[in-house]
Length: 230
Image (cartoon, rainbow, N blue to C red; front, side, top):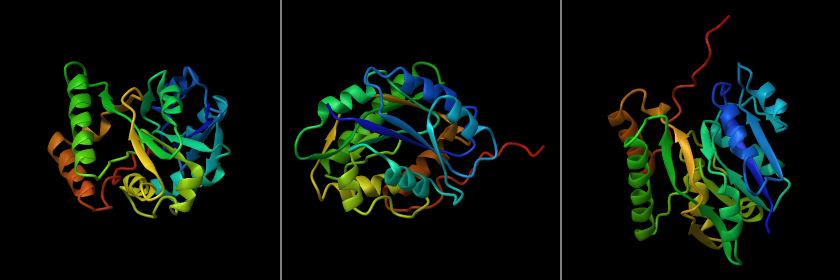
């Protein structure tokens, strides 16, 4: 049975991080380590992570790609799973990934849906995202999102790790991993993620995602959500 390090990049995530760490605590296959990469937070993100027993790595250079790369380099296990600090992996998330690790596979990814938007939108968001992933597989452009993916640490390092871009670093790494082995979709590895990116409206959210999946690597994380100054 493979062991997993879970990497969480986090910037000013004190409001969301406790539920994410609780979801990881409830895994039927416990992670070997949880690494929270504190990306220059101004709130209690690091303190909360330490209180939950996570390893905290400071990353003063802003950027989710830099934070993910720092976690990749520090991880102690052969396999790494990644999610976001506002996301809730299902209790069988790591167990499903572990069962899907076979010789020749270097990366795994699973479904996602929004939480906090109520029904039927939560279910609909999952169906739409699953359909999107299916289309990506059909056109041989798999879309591995940092909110729900797992990969061989060795293969990721051979692939050069995360590129230093503002956004889309996760998908680029996933596509680069395809040079070293098989990428597999694991439908049982569900992650629910915050719908906060919809705050400015559905149309801007969709437009930005369309820009990213067509190769643009800027603009997604324009809102750092800083807490108010004291």
